[in-house]
Structure formats: C-alpha cells, structure tokens
Image (cartoon, rainbow, N blue to C red):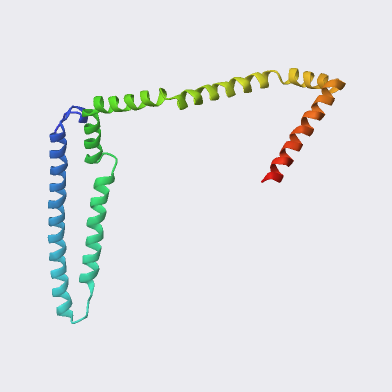
Length: 174
C-alpha cells in the first residue's frame, strides 16, 4: 500500500489503488461465492438423504447476493473510500485551471451593469434602513409638525385626491 498522502499521489497511483481494491473485492466475492456454492452442495446432499423437500438453495443464493451487494455498497460509500481520495487528487491537480475559470467567471459577473446596480441598490437600501431605524423619533416629530400645518394638510388632500382619480381613470380605461 502506498504511504504517501493523497495530495502527493499521482492520478495513476490512485487509479491503481482503486483498481487493486476492486480486484481484492472481486477475489473476496469469488471466495465467498465458492464457499456458498460448497454450502449449497452440502445442504443439497443432506436434504436428499433426509428425503425432505428443502428450498434453502434459493434462500441462500438470495441472501448471498444481498450480502455481496451490501459489501460493495459499504466499500464504496464508507468515509475513507478510494473514490473520495481519487476525486480530491484530480481536483488538486487541476486547481490552477479551476481557479482561473472561477476567477474569470467572477470578474465577468462583477463588471456587468446589472451587478453594479444591484450592489448600489442593496447598499442604498441598507443605508436607508439604518438611517430610518436610528432616527425614528425624528421622523415622527417631523410628521406630527406637518400634520398640524393647515397648508400641508390641504396640499396632501389634493395630492391624495389626484392619485385616487388617476387610479380610477386607469381602471376605467382598461
């Protein structure tokens, strides 16, 4: 087994390690299959001697298939499976190219007018919220003073009336 850390191994070394792992798994599978086959033969002999109908062969075969599938699944999904190491190695070997692609994409995005407008809008919104939350009392004071001004009240009533009329006109035109 190779003692170098995964990041220092070549893709070839990692592929060979995965290949060797799969060969060992296949050998274990073949040995297991042979053992099951021998057990089936023994059971068949015993059942023929007793003259009792036994359908254990199918049960044993089904159980063996399930066990083999589970062993393969466990081997390839466990925490330190060889595929994770292989993928990490490939990503490490191509890190410079991936960094370039990501950097280029990021640069293209931040140079668009839409992105710039989004940043300005988000920043403006944040600043406005901060100002409003820090000056709630000031806005209430100004609003109360304006409510007491008769000229302001009459202008506000006219403005509201104009908005309502315009909305009604647009609704009738539709």
